[in-house]
Length: 389
Image 1 (tube, rainbow, N blue to C red):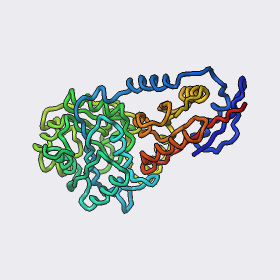
Image 2 (image 1 turned 135 degrees about the horizontal axis):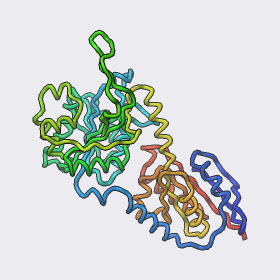
Image 3 (image 1 turned 120 degrees about the vertical axis):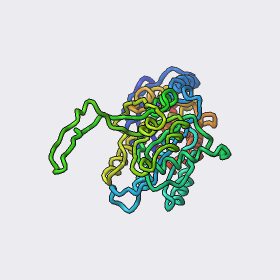
Image 4 (image 1 turned 180 degrees about the horizontal axis):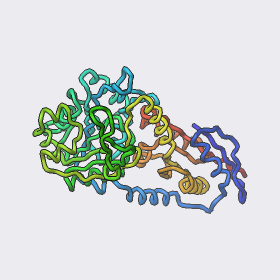
């Protein structure tokens, strides 16, 4: 934990008496130095405002039907040039596939995540699920090709007697080595799939596509503006994609790669295409692991839960931090209680503002209870006020 001690001085900035630096702590320095004693505020208003902000977020309100995910993860990772398949390569002491699973598990409106792996990696995957507490993940064996593995994942839902894998209305198919998928895009894909029957993410082409002659010379090039790269995730009405796989040929199973094409060819369902963000890239080569690690480290510092004590100074400082911290998402709660588990369970960084050590220890206990450290590094910053008389 980082500890910041503040001594109130009415009408003047507070002094930072003790500070231990970290990435998140450095962001606090300028803010606490410029903070002044406020008029008393009701800490409950912070939670009310945050609840209103949460209600505006995309998610549960828009998805009132069951959604599941299939993650084909049976690849050998030949292009990576490593003995370990890329989905099991470690980043920050955690397998890459675990980050991808978490991207879906953190969304309350997504149910089961079926992870399809080669038979020889089944036990390895089960250990990952257990170690990193992936409560929504179910592991099944894949096939010898990508399409065979996806079909195996879809078949996990076909048995209505298995309560762990209830049949979804919409199923999302995604790559196990694309960990950076955002809720906004997933929601768009899911809703479009429900309405249209199929949907998929696309990105502009980064390079011009050319055709060559058999002798190795340029034949012609495509007009790049007219074409897009097909990406993941892709969403489908479960009945449509399952039927498409039941009808497709052995050639499709052996050499096909495009799920959207199967839905169109065998079920007549034309997919709605949605442009995705640049973060949809997947880990393909060894150098991509370093890039993925850099993105994950940056993401870890981009959200915080500010826990404010009942003191007026603590409430006002929490309000100032929420307004000024350059983070994607900052929640404020009055104290670390069981009723606030939604905020505490999803947060990587905690900023506790109080005048006593006992309240701070309560925050540490809550962080330990959710066992965050199994998933990612956790930073706890304690801002403690020393009241002078």
